Image: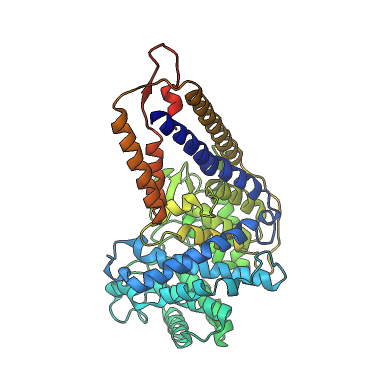
Length: 505
């Protein structure tokens, strides 16, 4: 029995090495060679992600709408309340970009995006405007939350309904869209500083800029013209409302417009992604300043820092907006930095960031991006990371911006890909060696064989059950635990029939 378990584990170990190490590293090696990462166009990785993500996104959004668990969440649960809606807007923006590519002749998807994604488009947009999903907003602002400050949520509503109207032309929620566009633009225009709060006493200029961009985009759906409002809105981010680096701040005082923090990478990338379609000249200037004060090369990486070069802030930290900050590099700054660089036509910067992204997302054979999936909120927003990556990889340069192609993959990308490939192949060879030794020299000394066999069987059955019910991470942990069994010793003759270390994964 124990010999059979060792043989089974050897097969499992080889399969896991192939699926978790060899396949993702080879996929990354192919993906980073896509010309659409070094210049305009839609990368094959984006089309592939759309195909695999869309059915999952539709099913998840429909389930969340049906159960209404968002109404029970606390306002302190930012990832549980914000991320499902933010992720839905990311997804909708991505499909708009892919549909635009289709309409200009890129039919790599096989099926027109707005047709293939119809159920997901409806579910994602309905999720954003569902009152139950806004319970946390109502707790902050009261029943008048759709007409009082509340920039972040109102921006999401405008964004989601504009994307749906552009894609489906089904006339859904147009009254709500018009109401939000007119009331929010009027409130921002009348604000002394040009800014409003996201939450009581919390103003994030990046969200205000995104709201202005969403109002601008909605004009094409509503037949309105807010160009004068957009032009005047630049006042909220320049002059005394900017930081010492002449970049907009991460946070500001809505009443006065004065910065209450320095410029930060997570906000800079977001605003440099948004501003090109609003104020061409200023957007170009901001991106140049951002590159000058935040771009760095370190430890084999290239990318944007979370805090300016020379700042006294820690280079090793974490928060809900920046994500982990590693040797100064901000995870969110560089994720959104992919989109910001592409939007500004700077593919020489977008390519190293994209290569790092595609090397670390760890694409599985079923199309799931393992690392973004794990780092998202698995209970409330499991596909936020994948939706964001789909959107960022689909962004094209803004009209009127010169395109600079090229760029090179940082050293880290090659180290990770080659290291994972070598490790995977080594584990496959070790598993085959263990299998052959076990079959040729079956004599083993095993402690508590029945207990180990029962424990192994329980772990395998648990792994199968959890994987079947969609708990992939737990299923993988149980399977890896099973591979640690059985514990064996040398044969009585002193020959090493099945060495302990070769029986483990």
